[in-house]
Image (cartoon, rainbow, N blue to C red; front, side):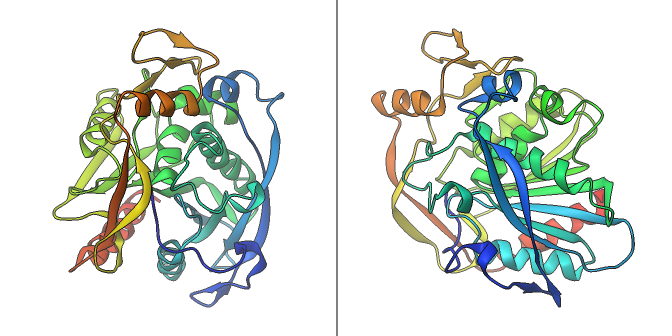
Length: 323
């Protein structure tokens, strides 16, 4: 799961200005659970980590709506920064999260198991919790936008079986925008409560399974949730940035691998045996997928024609309607 080329240097060490607003560095107390079970059941025992990012507040009014931007497998890139600038110019406070810097990770393109997908989702909830306490942020109007691996994090973070034990049943993101997310991990009980969810994905995306994402959103919708999906014709992964479509040869993906279903307590179900395991990890699942011939190397990315504009309009309309 790939995004644009990462900006030079660690994000927190740069002076960054979007739409005339200079970003404020913020630290977020998060954690490194090894899997969903640990995140849900042993939050006090999980290895802790302090991640960081930058907050941009365009208005001095007391209660600003906020969008948390969560990057994908190369960390904060030019496309995320461009979207942040657009949203700030539209009047939203924006927090650009850097989940990689504090973990000394540069890329997960070749290895998605350097830290768990559960940790990525935990990051989102930890960020929500921290920023909901800020006096200039309207805690009832916090949304999140995640790209690729970040989109996966968003989908898990809004799932109540995961979120309730971490941030409490009374708290939730108001809006969740899952951008070409990987849906290889799905809870058997996918309720998202009052969150408004929208996913956008290219029909030619070969980093992941478009059908898997469709089925994930359909399962969420079946619970009575407000969840929608938009499939952009002729679009590849990272179609939100302008650039000819090209292959990333080092990308290691398994779009046809079986979905790993997750029980209410966070146990991952082995698709070969059908048995849930409290100790199963992402690494175990990916190794199994590779052994069974589902892995492949190389995938494409890029946005052509009016695809970046389609994305930007969709993004603005979604948050305008829901925040």
